[in-house]
Length: 540
Image (cartoon, rainbow, N blue to C red; front, top):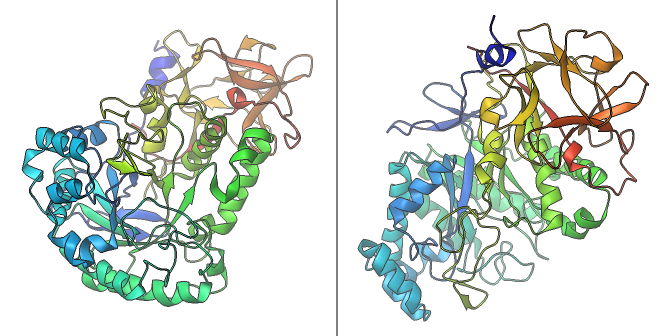
């Protein structure tokens, strides 16, 4: 007889990682709330990382640290299938940047050490113009099978963003709408023959005292038409107001532009969005998470719903990858639970472990960078384990497979599985088991068997049980955050799933704390945060 673990293994689905091979004919479109490959109709999930090229040097960061081909290969090896590559309008519209070489740009800023680094690691790029070097980055990403989203990040090359930095909204000091439109046209045409360029983000983080809905409609409508006319093959990705957090005005007045199923909206979400970093650090984390998700869905996520749904691309989220920021740590667990459940398209901030120049400092280190300051390793040693499920496609809009579930633990990035000894444990999500759950108070059944999860007692491991009708095998999703999974023991006490803090592979049940209402609970209960992720991927 096959072990339960082997039975579960045989039910592992044909996984769609979204890492669609890049052939010459790749062109993306939208179908309801999904991004799809036009030729096959198959879903493609944008699992991207942001790579900065919009700063003062106007050169993609890190080329002084590693060869371009090594960086592109590293991006692909980390499970990303896409790069959101930033650019500044002036790079393409102003005479000096257009003519400047990489060498001239770096030397003009006194970045001698960076110049030496590029000569050592990427000598073929050193005497190219800035635009030729940008082309080379796009080409290398395509060679490595990576899709590219070109993001108009700023007009004048500089760090982004502030309310009064002159780059925030149409008509600001450095943000001439006509020059911006000219830049969109130039870039759309320049990359129209490159199939790896699948999208263009129209403008990053509109903001500041000048912003208005009237001007947003006026210029965004012109911008999307400009891109679509110049390159009808790319997705046109549209941001809202208030640092890409606000699109709710579309509920009253749609954009009203026909882009032949090429329109995507984007939003940004950080712990500090809307000034909430202190809230994440000091307030009840379950309540903060639930409130933040409600706000995001009300202000931006609603575009995925209704009669005319459109894809939502979380084009920036990120955290301090050192793990030393409590607000970011709590935010990340909440974000992963949300984004995996809804199977979002996304782009992490950011790839770069360092900058040539930021805030007047050469070699400035980026703690939000996936890579370390030398561009050698991931800053977080468990990076791939933590983000693996986020990178996968979870929902296939063409599948007729009935919905089943993955049990996901966002704090660790692990999934629940039954091992070869028929014990329940937390494991890398590549080795997950699959479960059925009807909602309400019901058993969580191991798919393809007559077994279900069962409670044995407070502080004891969760088990597999063949008695699925007892209270000890009937589970509910509890708390306002909907991140606690509870059943009752023989004494009627509510016990919640929890990963053992001293052994991350062991899943226990322990007394539920704040499980009915976590709005006034100051305890950090992330070890008890589990999410039942619905999926309909085809099974073997």
